[in-house]
Length: 268
Image (cartoon, rainbow, N blue to C red; front, side):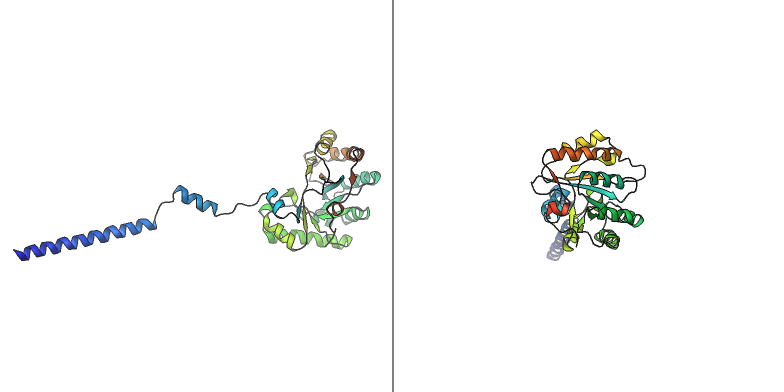
């Protein structure tokens, strides 16, 4: 009888040990496959940094990334997408008659096709900036692609007018932090604007005037275009330019190039 009891106790003990082992293994497996809770999901998503906005980039890299000048009665007129034989000569003639010096941002592929027009801009006393070689959207490009576009264009500009521009304007005003860091490290300044004429939309004279005059203030950087794509119509912008200049002069503003407005060198 005692042997039967001992065997029964041994069997029960063995079963208890097996049960404990199974429960422990199950808990371990469950721990390895713990479902993601809301708190964990938030923690994970917060660990991935969101790209900085343009405003945040300007604040973080305030000495490199500019969109306006100091609060003085000076304004910088800037013209993108040059040289373009359809529009650039007309803008140059108006500026000559008005006695105004401006800043022109050059697309490398166009400068390659129209070096004489780039020389004319330079010889007329205007400042030259770099607007990339092929006018891409830089925001989603690599730093290496950004570097190649900038350096390819500056070689063309240097070969044509004798200097490498210090000022870069990214097409569409879009840029990412890695590209700003590269620009800072290599002695460039990134230039956007705080007054947009929206002339690229083909707006008429009065609308372009209103877009500029209603937004301008001390230290403003004004964006217009003296070049465009196939089918572009910049006649409204060109027609508005004399009135814009005269209206702002009547309010006591002086027109300067970006190197003057920002107190920086024009070349590297």
